[in-house]
Image (tube, rainbow, N blue to C red; front, side, top):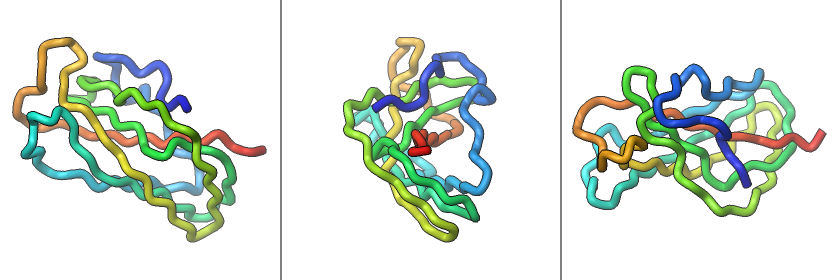
Length: 128
């Protein structure tokens, strides 16, 4: 399963894929990461159909990009996962796990304390 292709360290977050019409993606992540030693943090994302019919395959977990001032500082974690089918009708909701890394993609170790932006991306390969 592939996720966010082509997003690299230092890229602008404007390069992330946009939202498909009729779908809403909401994320819930910790405001503060207490266990920095693990090198990852976890949350959930909810994909909701606000009118779109959608059938396809997605990854079992959302891709997570960490940014600071609009620049990618942590790329999505590498995953080796089997795709999961997803089918959404108006009003349907799908919840997915979402994990992100804390190691800077520049190779300088863990991110220093401070404010960061968390961007979750769910890529769906449509059946049609």
